[in-house]
Amino acid sequence: QVQLVESGGGLVHPGGSLRLSCAASGSISRINTMGWYHQAPGKQRELVATITRAGSRTYADSVKGRFTISRDNDKNTVVLQMNSLKPEDTSVYYCNAQVRAYYTSTYEPYWGQGTQVTVSS
Image (cartoon, rainbow, N blue to C red; front, side, top):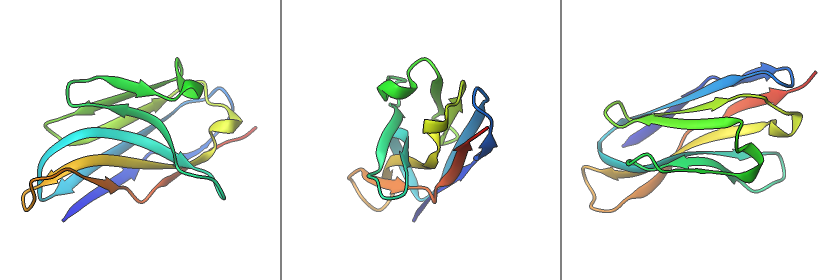
């Protein structure tokens, strides 16, 4: 069993900052890619940022230069630092991890419960 727990969402004014954190726990052997996705009501879940174990980062065009993703492989955590927030960033943000559990030889995706981010003046 693997669980991802997120924190750090909230309400912020345009131009403000938030830091989202996600901690993975459970029967984890290894985590490959970790990332953050967002999903607004009635829309598909979309990639925000990902980071590999080696530290290679991918960002959606809409957040480049504003968001920074980082991770701690030993602690199985991933953080999304969000700066210069815009109203269009408003969404539910979900943590994702490609996890190889102790009971399997394959990587499978796990998701957090989601945390609400609202950017409004």
